[in-house]
Amino acid sequence: MAASTGSQPSHFLEPTAKTAPNTLAIISLSKENFQPITLQQSDSAVDGYAEGVTLNTRFGSFPHSTLLDIPWGSQVRASVVDTGSRGRKRRRDEVEDEETPTSNQDDGNDTPSSAPAKRAVVASSGFIYVLRPTPELWTSSLPHRTQVVYTPDYSYVLQRIRARPGSRIIEAGAGSGSFTHASARAVYNGYPKSDADLRGKVFSFEFHELRYEKMQAELKHHALDGVVQLTHRDVYDEGFLINGQSPKASAIFLDLPAPWEALHHLARRKTLKGGKLDDKPGDWESPLDPNRSAFICTFSPCIEQVTRTVTEMRTLGWTDIDMVEIANHRFNVMRDRVGVNIPNEKGFSSQPGDVGEAVKKLKSDLKRTQDFHKGQTSQLVSDASESKMDVDGSTPESSSKDSNKSEDPLWLQGRVVHRTENDLKTHTSYLVFAILPREWDEAAEEAAMARWPCGSEGKTIGNLDKQTRKQEKREMLAGRKRKKQSDDTQTTQ
Ligand SMILES: C[S@@+](CC[C@H](N)C(=O)[O-])C[C@H]1O[C@@H](n2cnc3c(N)ncnc32)[C@H](O)[C@@H]1O
Image (cartoon, rainbow, N blue to C red; front, side, top):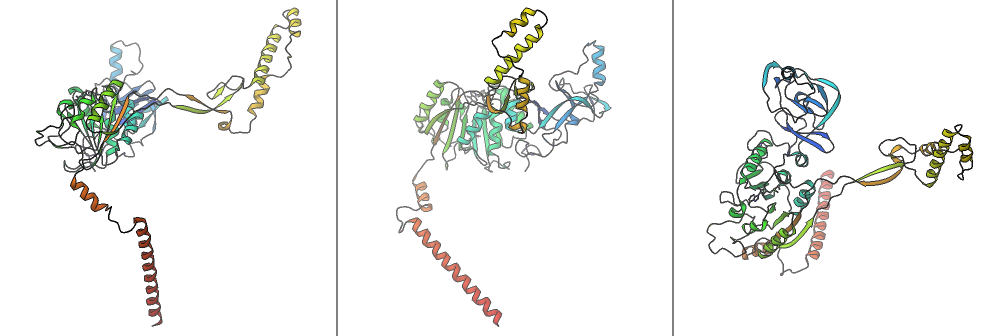
């Protein structure tokens, strides 16, 4: 199904197998270093690059032509880039250093030339990976306009507020769009065809005009504008209705400086700040789905904010209120091969493995010192021979040879150890969760009674089921018997 504004669905939601022009790609430069770029097709030299639009990194230059129409996740080798007129221009400017610039992508001055684009030639070193955009990679590489919610927090939040395909989420403020991308993927069950098409959707609100405009452009570029509806609004004053209509949300995420200021808008009846029902509700609608409980999470860095939020939640009838703080630690579990004189490589620790090996090492060091001084002064030699240490011929070389004799494959040698790695990037905040049950009236009670009758049962439900099952089995066996008899009669005729 196509996006509301574009012809292709978002790569965040429905990935294709290969990279394509005019789409977002995340370039992995190293384990923790990602760069988002828009892949571009060039028919001619651009901005002095004879190969067309080129990405320059500290690992080399990558004409976009080498990044297009390849499977996502491919490793791409750097190219020897012909800087063409760009190089001549730089020489004219007496630029001493002829190295390719290591800036972001280019100078933002993509002036095409009339010469056709040259084929890229592979360089001797340097590579990158071209990755399909995902909310996690976008969070790691997006342009920060605000503090953002990181993956460890939003993955937990989304499951606690029951976000799933088809859910309708209210989010404020949108900020840099980190949470927005993750929630759009969580609720996606196809692009809505009209406002009446109540598919999964994120209703996002942002009051900062510039941030709103940047995010609107990003959503369009990422083909998410059909799944995310961004509104420029101060939600403390104006609440969460869209053109006076209810988004019918059952999940809410508030990353605002004062979430308690917005809570009274998230009620079942028009409520004033402080919890008093508005006696002039007019044609006010609740932004919440009337048929479901609403699940909320607020994200606040200070406990004082939490206290005010919880107080307001209690006043407004929210239940099951609790607070969580996510503390992530990443552990690197590996096999550590210890022992002196083993190769000085990753995974090898050149410390003595035990006391025996340490003593042998000391003896060998001492012997080497003795050998060095032998012949220089006879006095030194005689001193050494009186040493209390029993220097025998054995050296750690022999012991390490012994230890390396292991028949075990490399990955089974050594001890399993774990070390903490740099913590995952996260922005520590307190997560307050709560539930606002759906309103319950006589009609709801009657509907529930009709669906799940209780109080007037003649028999216990389990017992009745068992009897029904037995009766069904009896009828099935009788049916089989009848069929067999009629088959037998037909064959004898
Ligand atoms: C910390 S940022 C949100 C970051 C976002 N959750 C993310 O993951 O990228 C908070 C945002 O709330 C916006 N904001 C603050 N008060 C607001 C209000 N009353 N109405 C709407 N947005 C508001 C700010 O402009 C800011 O962009």
